[in-house]
Length: 276
Image 1 (cartoon, one colour):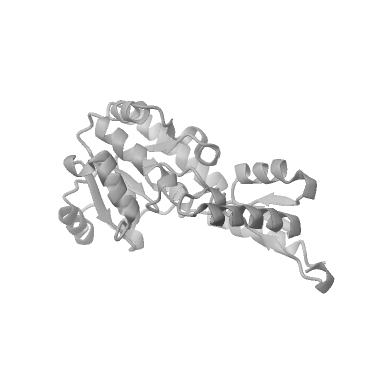
Image 2 (cartoon, rainbow, N blue to C red):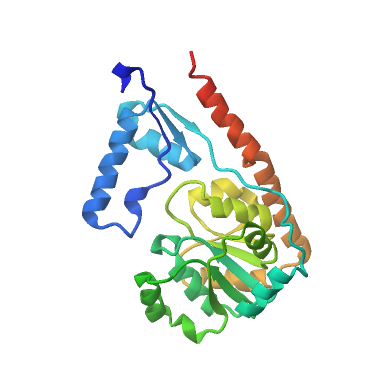
């Protein structure tokens, strides 16, 4: 690339070789491709500080040049009102009540810790629902999870399919009592930023990728038995003042570091600075 005067910028987007959907040979391929990507890139644009740290520490022999630029989020409230017909029709069709549910939005894959979130929720004593916005059609993982957790026996567990209408999903996020985020592989996750920008109470899997984004604006759980279940029970008893404090911290965090205006500006600086 260099002999043709071409600059190669790469955004690695997390640890692809750790994703459970890949077979062992494919995981090996992804790991090799990651190494070559870092070796050949003129600049590695990392969407997470933890990804940047990982690259610097594990590929120091290539002396990689890196920079951190995350994703952005929209801080504007949904245009839908609480009495909007589209919203209430959706609630009615899913047998869900506003502010009476915990919410999960994300790809339905094992590394997002669905098993832990569902099984721990089932162990909790909350009277709220667990609403899962995700696509599980023709998904072997869904059947595996159903057999392992028997979640169909718990009426609080509600798989509601996907929601692609922007204002509707934003309003569903806003009206959730709490948001559960279990992503464990990858950098700055868009669904996490969206949750912090909209949902007041966020319960995140305790991993560097998530903590660097939310910092003090969320509560954290781990994989230990009853850890998340106990946290959910505690969250049900939180004073409104505490929830409002967490919500304020989360939104201030997004407003300071994860607005689209800031992200675009950082990319413009990267590309603009290379025009010499």
